[in-house]
Length: 176
Image 1 (tube, rainbow, N blue to C red):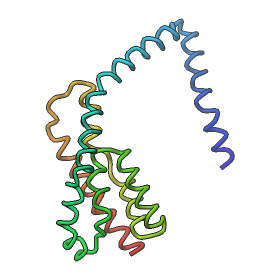
Image 2 (cartoon, one colour; image 1 turned 30 degrees about the vertical axis):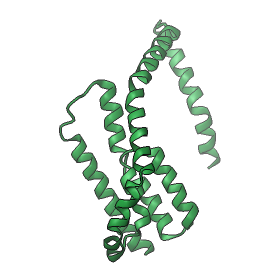
Image 3 (tube, rainbow, N blue to C red; image 1 turned 180 degrees about the vertical axis):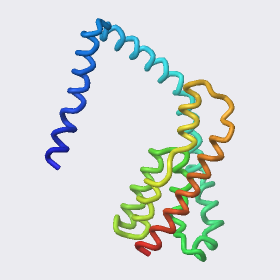
């Protein structure tokens, strides 16, 4: 573990030094290229800002309006009948939208139920088995100007659904 920590501490400075040595050797203006890259990064950040604000507002409306809780209350009897804890559903619904919101929900679930509880383990497994599909499509596709997503949304959400179901099945088999 000590070797890995030492390597990880020195890896990035060594990589930067390597880039500077190669740039000097090839007579490439490294600093000017770094500044140009920084300018492009700032432009990209401003391009992404409306997409991010839209997603944050949507998540806030969903949670604050009580629509999410009403939906969970509606399907709770079915979930309990099949052995799925209803507490996990907000995480399953928010995870494809926002990684930070899902991480906050996972933290809340672990705080309230404990890290070694079934719900804590299920939330952790679900967090690692799914992705932020809508965030990825919004930000990355928006950044490079793709308007038609074709099958990316369907396949991404299907992969998230499979990750959620696999998490429930695996955690139930291993820890249930």
